[in-house]
Figure 1 (cartoon, one colour):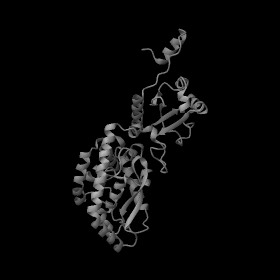
Figure 2 (cartoon, rainbow, N blue to C red):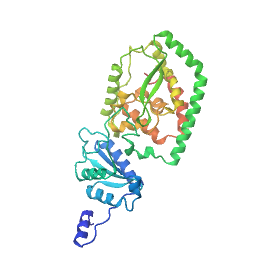
Figure 3 (spheres, rainbow, N blue to C red):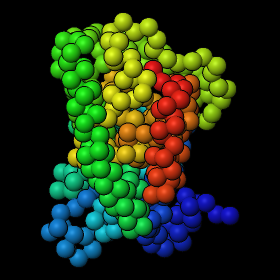
Figure 4 (tube, helix red, strand yellow):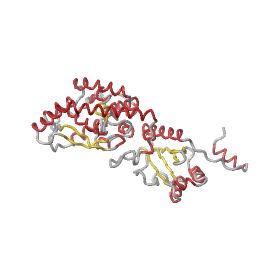
Length: 381
């Protein structure tokens, strides 16, 4: 079989014009991008995505893309993949790297990772009026604005442009969330009032505790819970616990599985928690105010638990998928299958399994099984 480079040399020797570069169609290109992103989760290698767009006026010109495509094609490596990220609007180039670049900075023009012919070509395109964006996956974690609308959008076309059937399923799930949260708030209003009074009577401070969590598509939001700790409690103990929990999951097999840890990960004898708070946590009653978050759309009735910012900063690349692929929920597979009896990596796998297989009937089944899990108290902190 004649290799492409040999074919180009053959055409030059024969005096034939060079082959016109071909771009992959949008579906094939995006499938390659998604595959390389998932491969990077397991291999630890980095993936670079280059996006080149032209203005409406430039695209309106005759053969507006021809020269751009030829210049980019001439500057790419043999292993680079080039195609339409958005047909007729944005060209994409995917390049795999042997290792993560030193101190990568998102959206800085890509000079730190593309210091070859492609980098020079991109600088020329930018000088010529094209909009050029270079993204590296996995990206460094930035809690401020670290969502799909900023640095991560390019690598997740499967989440941004969901098919029609998936959008219909999302609409049905949202309808269930609205109905369920409204009914829950109405029916449980007397109990919520009693708990709020008891929290105020048994310890000083407000009845509700507000805390920033990382939500769907990495967007932060404020979660509401009944206060279970004494006011001004130090978070150092929990930070250290979270670090050990995540690190232990990594030591037991990582993303590809491995041996299960027999150690029970549970923060016990925490003196920061009030006596009433222990009961509220054991029964998960402290979570009930989050029905308001469900009604607002920050959360869902069923989904992964939303992580704390300092937990999120310790995630590896594949861990982040739990805040990308499903909206956080009040309950989920982890709550009914193990809670703190599982390792952190096992918890993430359960969250990702839910994201892949979620359905309206599946959500109803998890909701129905949640009361038994709460009453049993297995694995509750």
